[in-house]
Image (cartoon, rainbow, N blue to C red; front, side, top):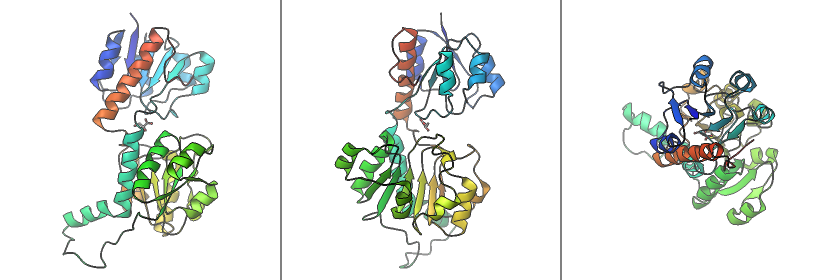
Length: 317
Ligand code: DGY
């Protein structure tokens, strides 16, 4: 019987589906595995189900040649070396589509919380700082009529735009390719990256991590953002140079930031921790019961297709 290595506790629905076709070897630790732990757990397994916390590179694939398929429990796949997978004939899949709404909901939650100072207000109140409503106290920003700039109008970016339109935000976006049908549906306008920086009152990063986006938001680019703008990141942490963001916030270049992902996850740059105008969320984009369950069944659909010799629905290579 084939063996499937699963690096984390996953929702039962996906595990049950896979258990009908193969023996499951599930990590006893519910935490990111070290490389030696992963190597040991995978021994003799034809399939590996992993998360973005496990880098699957050429060295790993060469050391564990019995692993013929890697099913990533995430839509983002910057932890997978696709080129090595392709070259070594290892099938690799991800979980697109099923987490777009959950991630877009969290993005909107962060935009609202940041612009209306919800987290800051909560902290103040608990610390005894609420002395009654005051006309000039804790003033945030309206969303209505402001411009939201979306970096990356893929499935998640589009789901963010749909929600933002309902709050009266105008949408501009920068993506690898213009999306004319999304422009028609959302009234969105395609702009160059510099224009995105200069015109947006809020920027939402919904792009994947790749060589073109790595470190894209650094002190120099943040300085070109509209003064008083906000920066939201629910994509991937290394798209922002955290030290530069902390400095830009400290220097008052932009009004605030809300992050769900980090450059050196799970570490957060200490310069961000003490700032009241920063919301720090612990990578919760897809963290709803429904979405995580659907991710587990999609992972299983990909694995079962592979084991049955069919084309996995979400094959990357
Ligand atoms: C993804 O799927 O890429 C998310 O970041 C994981 O929650």
